[in-house]
Figure 1: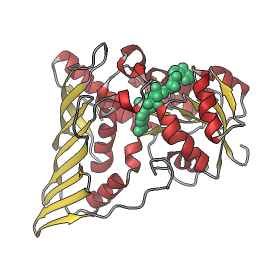
Figure 2 (figure 1 turned 120 degrees about the horizontal axis):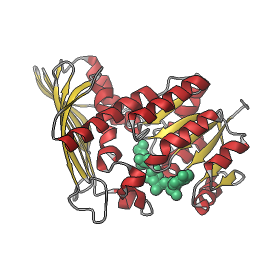
Figure 3 (figure 1 turned 90 degrees about the vertical axis):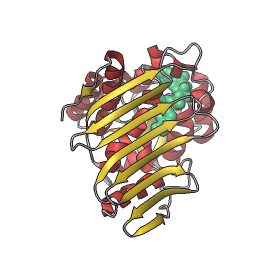
Figure 4 (figure 1 turned 60 degrees about the horizontal axis):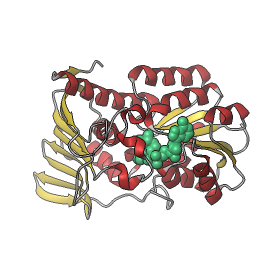
Length: 342
Ligand SMILES: NC(=O)c1ccc[n+]([C@@H]2O[C@H](COP(=O)([O-])OP(=O)(O)OC[C@H]3O[C@@H](n4cnc5c(N)ncnc54)[C@H](O)[C@@H]3O)[C@@H](O)[C@H]2O)c1
C-alpha cells in the first residue's frame, strides 16, 4: 500500500458529498484518487470541490480495473451495494459500504466471505453509532445506573428522502432501493438498538404500508414489535411521512428509570431515575471532527484499515441489522411473527 490510503468513491450523490468525501479529505492518511458515478457530471463536480486531480469514471468496473486504489466507499443506491462491494474486494480494495449493506442475507454473506478470502476490511456505515448522543447513551447504559433494560422503543422518521436528495428518485423505486423507509431509516435504529443494549432480537412482528408517496413502489411507513432473546420487549418504527417535527429517538425503560435519547433536541440524553428521584441531563462528548457531520467516518475507516483502531461497524454487525429488517418484511408479508436464530 502506498504511504497514504488511496480512496475511490463509487456513487457521488448526497451522502458521498456531505459525509464521505469531506471526511476523507480531512484525513491526513487518505488521498481521494478516483470518483465514479453513472452520471459522470456528478463525479466531476464532486472531485472539483476537494480533489481536482482525481480520476473520473462513469463505470466502477473500469475504475477498479485500472487500479491504483486501496479502498473505496460504496455510496450508490442499495441494489448496487453488493455487486460493487464484491467487485471492489476482488480488485484488492478495502470497502466502506453504505447502509443497508445489501439487499439479502445471502448477498451480505457473500460480501463477508469475499472480504475474508481476500484478507481485506469490509465495514458498514451505520453512522448513528458515531453521533455524540449515541456515544454518551452507550456510556450511560454501560455505567449500570439504570439497571436492567426492560423495554426499548426506537423510531426514525422525517418527511421523506426528497429534501435530502432531490435527484434521488431511486429511493422510491423498489428495483433500485429494494426497501423504503424500513431500510432507509429503520436499519439505523435496528443497528442502534443492538449497539446500545447489547441485546439480540429473537422475534419480530411487523406491519408496513405506503400511505402517501405517489408513484412509490416501496413502503413509506413501518412499525414492528420486538422480543429479545432475554425476554425484553420493544418497538421499532420508521416513517417517511413525519411532518412538523423530526422523530429520531430511542428510549430505554429500565429497572431504575428511563433513558431518553434524541427525544428533546435541547437535551439529547436525559436519564430520569426513581431512586433517588432525579433527572440527569448528560453533557455530550465532542464530535469526532469539525468537518461535515463531525462523525469522521472516513478517518475511522482509514484507521481501521491501518490497524490503528477497530472498525466502528463490522460487516457481521451490518448483516445483523439487515436481518432484523428482512425479518420484519417477512412478517409484514406473511402476517406472522418471524423468529431470528442466534
Ligand atoms: N449512513 C447514512 O447516514 C446515510 C444517509 C443517507 C444515505 N445513505 C445511503 O447512501 C446510499 C446513497 O444515498 P444518497 O442519499 O447519496 O443517494 P443519491 O441518489 O443522492 O446518490 C446516489 C448516487 O449514486 C449514483 N449511482 C447510481 N447507480 C450507480 C452505479 N451503478 N455506479 C455508480 N454510481 C451510481 C447516482 O447517480 C447518484 O449520484 C444509499 O444506500 C443510502 O441508504 C446513508
